[in-house]
Length: 296
Image 1 (tube, rainbow, N blue to C red):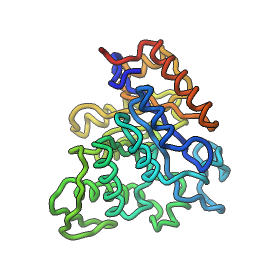
Image 2: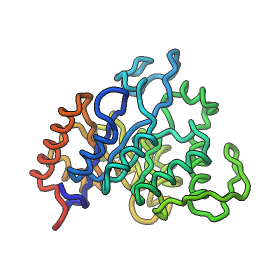
Image 3: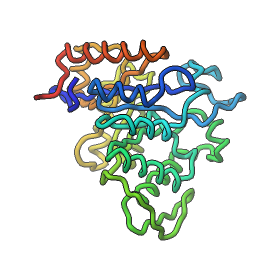
């Protein structure tokens, strides 16, 4: 598959639900790089409290749909390894939880990754469905959106200003020096969250686009709502929209492109490295066969 955006205007990405078994993130990212995928994504959970009040969005209760939630690797270490063995594919998270970190050190990690990867970093973030996990990081109930907004604003200041400072409710530091700066003048930020008006207003104010959730099967109405919200907020251009998919279908992909979807994201199976390599090759061949290739 071509390394550029396809002639239909769609990019394609791969997400690896990292764990301490199966394929290593660097090996999976190399497959993405070699087969022309645009972006390689990894998730984040620092830990999963055994006793939880928060229900998982998919199961509707305290049960988890996959034991890899308990076994996820650190995303920035994972993407650092991926950066060392790739040259083209973008490196991102689906999704990271910035409020579970110190924003100054997290800004340093992301800037370093962008520096070492020659400007290939994107940032997918979430508000965090697991409020019990957030509580262990001292995130106040009902304040996670405000906290995330401040974290992003503070990190952007550290990434762009020669003498950065930020004064907010959750982040407060005086004039400071912080290098390296990212290679990119702007690191794209996408939000993985339910397709609601509340979330889209947040995105229009503080981010660059939306990553759909596994529960978003019919995205026509949410995409239109996001686009209208974006325009209503006087944002330039159009939002980036990354749609999760499970099985590629050419009619659906063309329809999504016409809606305004910019990238389609496929999850890698929880299998051994050889099986994953076969899956990636078959997926790339199928997408090429549908005509989703860049212009030569």
